[in-house]
Structures are given as C-alpha cells and as structure tokens.
Image (spheres, rainbow, N blue to C red):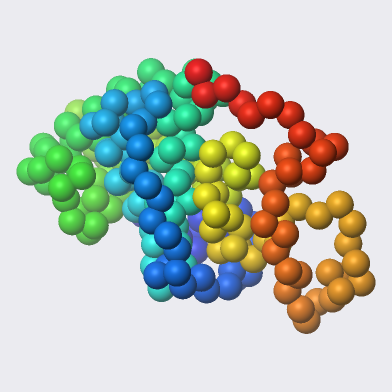
Length: 204
C-alpha cells in the first residue's frame, strides 16, 4: 500500500519534515459529524488514520482532522462526492467483514492496511470501483491534512509542521530566505490577512 513517504512525495516535500512530538498535540474533541452518519464517520476516520498514520516522525491525518474536513466538505464544496462516499464506505465495511471477518473499524492496523491495499489494487472482490473510491479518499485525505486550516483540516497546523512549511507570509525578510535556518512558523491562515478575508465556506 502507499506509504507515508509516498504521501510526502505527492505533496512535494519528502524529507523536508521535522519531527513533531505526537504527545505534545492535544486530542481534538469529538463532535457529531455534519454530513456523514456516526457509523460512516467512524469508518472514514479509521481509513484516513491508515492512509497518513501517526508515527515516530509526527502526527498524521487523525491529528489534522482530515476526516472532519471531508465530512464538512461533503455538505458543501465536496458534495458531488457524497453518493460515492456513502456507497464506498458501506463497501469498505462489507469487504472487511467478508475478507477479514470483522468491521473495518475493529480490524488490526495490519488487516486494515490489507483491506486498503486490495482496494488500491482493485482486488477487493464484490466491491465495484474500489480503486476509484480509494483514490478519492486518498486525495481528500491529503487535502485535509495539508490544506489551509480555513477549510477545516490541518488542525493546529500539524500538516504544515510535518512538511516544514512555515505558513503564509506577505513579505520575505533576508532571514526568511536563508537556507540554513527554518523560518519561524506564522501560525496563520491566508484568510487571517485582511486582504484575503471572506466568509467561512458554508458546510451545508
């Protein structure tokens, strides 16, 4: 299956990430999903947690709240994918039960990876368009992990910290342009600047 390093290569910054101590990150409070059902949301959270996992190198999609980004988007700017998610998430659970004997959310990390690998390779029997759904969720998980926090993902800037991106800045000082020093993170969304400010995207 695709690895964490592959994800960073897709983002274009493999090797640029500095380690972020996971234990220093506050766990996001649980709240109801806005678009998906609780069961669908739980399956999605389990999937994104394996696509960009938390490990010794730092946080992953869980801490970035990628599943919440997707759920929020499915009620708005990602709404064309809602039917695919409802069908696909049900397909994941059905295949997990038939192939591994338990719901996806109850499988070990190894078995979850095996299910996702079968989906990626379109080898999940009885799961039409499994590879297509895998690609959709992977793309949205990457978005939710590394997007501007304005859109509901990249919580606490963990995605940007992971890849060593210091954030939006309108000017670059001489110090910012030095190759031997990491610029200080701004901890700002693009929309924290008045010139870009606009109403938050409607989740519905």
